[in-house]
Image (tube, rainbow, N blue to C red; front, side, top):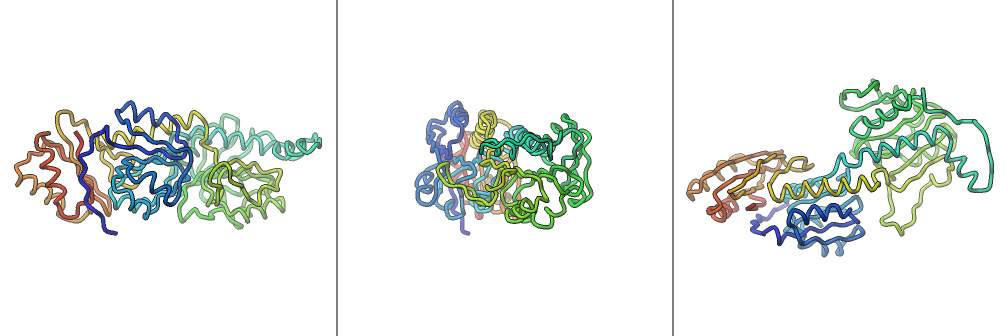
Length: 413
């Protein structure tokens, strides 16, 4: 892929933010309060030419999980400064393509943690009591008053697969209900409360009354729960997936439910999800009365959407105003102080030996004094931030953009 060096002199009032998929108004307010006046919103995800047309002149782009930012789409947005995923996941963005174009991507890994945890906790109680099936019977005019397969959660074992921010919070909440909490993670994690780490996934599965999945979408987690893993679960147990739709093999889960090896499940995410609220949902799981199906709403509470809008917009603005790339998921991270009284130059380049030396040589030869300098790199990209006197800022930018291996240059006033 060949990148084009881009120099940007654009003033804040001329920068355009495009927010797709009904992102909460809190995001737009954050932009407005920071002095950004060009804010365009769309209620739904866009695809193809409609997407490219809508974002062709955007400097900042906000999306949720429905918009696909492929390498081809990114090639059409030459002015794009940064992308904000107003959600936890970032698999809808070609992160490497964005990085190679000098576009950092930010997300909201923590803002909806509580909302997801509460939904999972509700699912646990409903499944253990057999409520989904009893509710379905009443809706059909039946009446089955029975304690069969109905249990308190107190004293039961919750197995958490993926002990990150959501998994740990669910564990703490479940303990307050008297549950025993065990977990399995591929990394060593410090247990919270009385949670116990299991030595293997099979040990967790065979001992848990409810298994809740909280892993990211990676090649390793795709179809992570298939025939073997479901068979290893305790007979009569329940499965909850509020992580990623690719983690559970739906055909295998359907078979496990049909033979009553599992007494129920709660699924919030699916391998293929409808694009828009007017689409039709099709799944083999819809025929089971003992399965709770929710339309990817684990983090869809008003509180979470407000928090996500605020968090991601604030990250985009901090990068725009200050240059800080802290918490970017695909980009070298630099935490920067204020640059009051000076101009700040951002230089993104291919990470090859000698670039920083070349930068300093050009600035020195031009008689430009460097007041402060910051550098961070990853395997492919380097990010250097330089503070200079405002009077020399445009000359300095010209010098930076002439450096070989430059991907993008930008100036902050």
